[in-house]
Image (cartoon, rainbow, N blue to C red; front, side, top):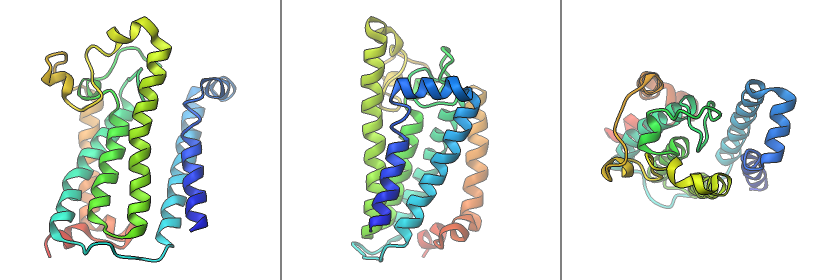
Length: 228
């Protein structure tokens, strides 16, 4: 249990760095933006892998029995989550997490939500939380899901303070909740190159996971559970 909490604390601490402007600017100035993003991504993936390894080492304590409908929810939610994650990371987005945050022209995914990466992370955790009814999964995915929601709130507050009077115009054609700006008539749906790439990546990864990739990595076959 101690190792799990240590790994989780490291993961959360690592994702607090971008929120501290002075530290981020110093790292970018020293390493360069591309090197900083590459190293930060690798370290973050490593930290997340440690969190999963520590969680899987915990004893399995069942809270509810797995059912086919729970697996189907995960099968539907995870591809949506993956699409949001990939599209969000590779699309220009000056208001949230992105490899291209420095660009002012927002990508098409931002019209759906200005926090696609965090929504993708949340949907991924939600799908796995529903499908895995045991204590360690609730601890793991529950903590990561809360991290996503808190991350949106913190990013909104930081951007509002940074932009000041320009905040209202900056968010005019986007929304926190997916599709809210479109429903409200403030944004139009569009498709650009990053979204097409994200769709292709999502399709390929989903097929691979359902064809045995997930079972090979984590010892659980979601399709087998869903069709049982």
